Image (cartoon, rainbow, N blue to C red):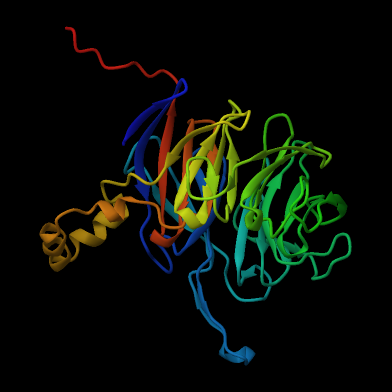
Length: 349
C-alpha cells in the first residue's frame, strides 16, 4: 500500500530515484548513501567486477560515488557528478561498501577488498586513505559499514574481524569491541552500522540475523529481530537506520524488504517496495525507445518491478523525515516519507 498507519505512525511511499547506469545519470548496484549539505546525497555504487588470477586482467565497471541533489518532490533530482573510480590506487575503489560524511563535507568510504578507508574532500578530491589488513587493533579485515559517532569519530564495522572499531577521522584507532559468536554482544560477519541521537550504536549482525544495540562505549544493550521470514524476523540484514523518534529500520537483505521496529523492539511494519511509477531518469530511457514503450503496454502488470530486490543500504533523512532505501539489484533508491501531520480523509462532507 502507498500509505499506511501503524501504531500512531504514518508512512507514505513517495517515489524512486535512479536507473541502471555504469556511469553518469544513474546508479550501478547502490549499496549505501550519505547525506550532505542541503539537497546533496552521496550514493555509493558497488559496481560490477570480473576478477581473473592475473592482476592485469582485472576489470570492473560502475564503482563510484554518485553525487546528486534530491529535493522534496518526485522529479526534483539532478546529477551533480561522480567521485572515484575502479582501481586500487589513490582515490580508487574495488569493493566499496559503506560511506559516511562529516560536518565539513568530507566523505569516508570503506573498501572491503582493499581493507582500507578512503577519504574524499567536499569537492570530491582525494584526501587520504588509511588501513591495512590484519586482526590487531587498528587493522581492518573486510571493512563494511561506517558511521560518525556523536563525538565526530568514525565507527568502522570490521566484518571479517567480527567487531566494531572506533577511529579518529585521520585513522588513529581509539578502541573497539566485539568477538565472533552468537551470544548477546557477539557478532558474526556484521555489516551496517548507525548511531542514534543519544550515541547508542546499532549494528546489522549479518549472519546472526539480527540487529544489536550497544552503548556508546560498546556494551550490549538490546537486540532487534530474530531469524526467519515472518513479521519482525530477519535473514542476513545488511543495514540499519534510526529516526529522531527512535524507530529502527533494517534492510532485511535476503528477504528483499525493510522492516521497522519501535524503540523497544516491537515490530511495526514492513516495506516491500512501492515504485509504481518509473523514476524520472528511468522514464527518459523508456521514452527514448519506442519498442520498450510498446512492450511495457503489453504486460498484464508491472507490479514485480515496484518491489525491492535485495536492498543493501538505507539512511533516514531527519531534515525531510524520509527514509531512503538502496534498492540495490534494481539500481535505484525508493523513498518513503514519515508523515508527521497526517489527517485521515473525511467523507462526511
